[in-house]
Picture (cartoon, rainbow, N blue to C red):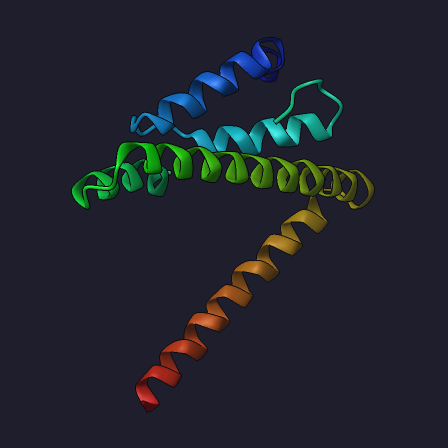
Length: 131
């Protein structure tokens, strides 16, 4: 399956993100992250609901099309660059850590993340009850 994504690389990523930008609910952000991780492993690829909902909100608010076009393009470029770079470097770091420490350490990290998230939710709920 990875071979398919490596072989079709940038054209496939371009089509998925373009379709998402048109308002079709496809996993554009997930694809961008996946291609960033693949790029971090040396595969020569480069690398939401909120993105296509913004178009509807702008239309309902009667935003001029030229203003929406400019800000949508600027936001899309910033979003794609940020997500691509973060997934590239985080993917490389994660792959290096898994290679060095194994999947047990990755599972331990995931468990710590989930426990931290649950602890934060519990703390927030108790704080909310006090107010």
